[in-house]
Length: 204
Image (tube, rainbow, N blue to C red; front, side, top):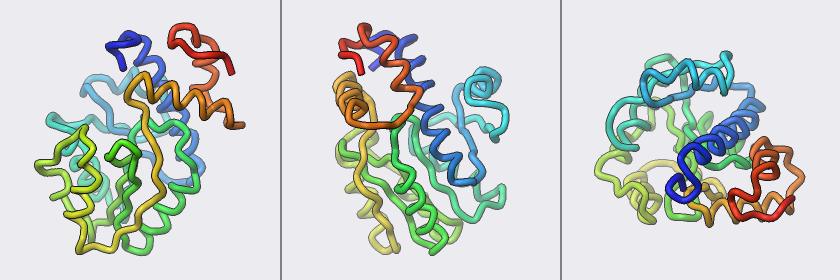
């Protein structure tokens, strides 16, 4: 989306997305581990997300390498389950996350499919962790969710309801339309109200 609206504008918008999702996940009452990039960005990231979280730099490599590192780090720290989400689903329902956490406590793998063929959440315990889902995966394609499920076919998997992420200007317009029908008080909503003209949006 940065190529369409400008990278500085996209970064400002995604900062709002991250803070909105963080506000939701805080309601779970669980530790929040934030994996950031580049490795020297902890100070600015903690400035706009807050100092009361645990920050870890991402590793080099593709998306799979970075997610695998997040899971292994979580388990090395002693956590008995980890549910990973990205920052591009700012209005992800809290109920979906609660369902995922409950499933993890029951030793199930958790996956939340996105409407573009990927997934917005993935969860493992140390016992059912399956790093093969991160190897040779066609990231950013519509086949990711389907291929991930094939790898997990021998596992006890809880599939969360389908949701969406915001990767394109079209996705942003759909998000804006959903906000018009929602009572959610999101930072993203305020930002889009203030800068709607930059994105070709109507006011909410």
